[in-house]
Image 1 (tube, rainbow, N blue to C red):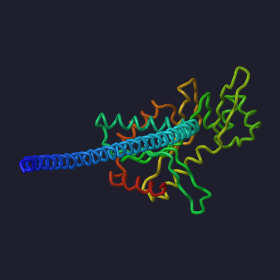
Image 2: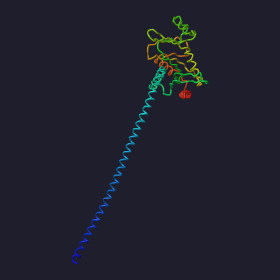
Image 3: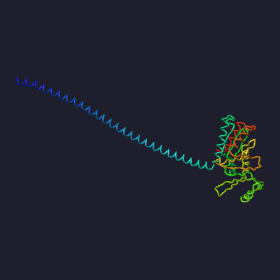
Amino acid sequence: MSTDILTEPLFIIVAALLVIIAISFLIYYIKHRNEVTENEKLFKNKEATLIENYEKTQEDERMAHKKELSNLNEKYLEDTTLLNNKLSSLQQFTVDKGEYLTDLALLNFKNKLVTEERIRESDMYILSNIYLPSRNFTNTRKIDHLVLTRTGIYLIDSKYWSGHILHGVTDEQFDEIPYLEGIFQLLNLDSQKEQTLIFEKENDEKVSVNYYNDTIKETETTAEKLRNVLKLQFDVVPIIYFNPKDNGGHTIMNYSTNGNTKVIVGTEQLEDYFNKHVFQGRFQYTVKDLDEIAESLMRLNP
């Protein structure tokens, strides 16, 4: 009996210890499982973040590469277009260099007048490459330059030449210049009409002779057509302007008896002529008139 009494409390103690151990293990297990679950969750989140960052980095690099490639293609196209435009401009400049230089001289002259406050900006228009279309488009005329001022409208036929120019020659100059008669016969020119000849040295052994028939007549006809098209009250003044090539050596002998068309050589004469007529001529047009004339010309040349 005494043995049973002793073993019963011992059994209870052991059982209690086992329960405590079981509860402790259970608590540890649950806590550890939660930690494992949390770690797994953190790992998955970290893995997802890494994957997302990697994919984003790859996409950013892909887009950056695509943008760089697009920029390179765009720059290539721009450079190619610019180069083509430069080549086209250079080709056009080579063809129309004389007209370009004349236009530049006129614009510089106008800017000088405006800067010196001798005229206002609206007192003068400089227009280039104006076309006068005909009804059937077979007789369209090109005007190299037009200068619109309050004292008149001036049509300039620009000639970019070098060498020695004989302008307005006829058979009346045959005695003074004996070789002219042979040239007229060789080129089959009408000696009763004023002709323009240019002698240019090509090399030490060769001289070229160019001729321009009806230069004055064509310029005057264009000026008259311009007046009719625009229904102007006053005549348009025709000017033949000889613009020496590269300011090189040149001479001009003007034998023309035509008083309607003015012949000018070089920028100095050009400025002198407009200095006299812009400031000394009487007003023919108002600023509003000039605006309307310029607008009418722009409508003809869209």
